[in-house]
Length: 138
Image 1: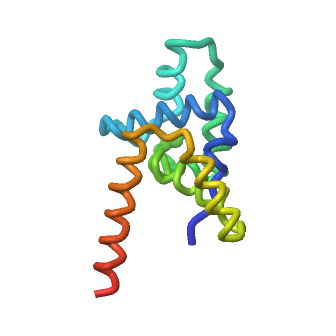
Image 2: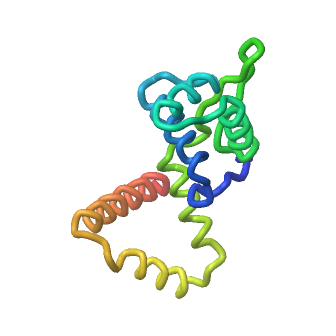
């Protein structure tokens, strides 16, 4: 069973900066990371105490957003899910429990200002999902 995650839209500015650093490191094949590595990265653009970064990373691990593994006396951290997976979970959580009519209306409001490129991306994503469902059913 998956651990519940803190919603991505509920992250504070520093939590988001930590997650961005961890996701970037993962994309570059530098994961998992120590607190020191994240502190060094974030300290390039802001004045932060090491202990502050350590506390934030511990809380993100408790919230299920980071995995934590012991390495000697320290911990190494990695993202539990990709940015995209976390965003999708947050979107799904917002829509769950709504009546079908309300859910559809919310989606229409969300898509009302979509650009032609975003609509094309949505159509492509829907086509891919439909193909996956068809493949599962066959």
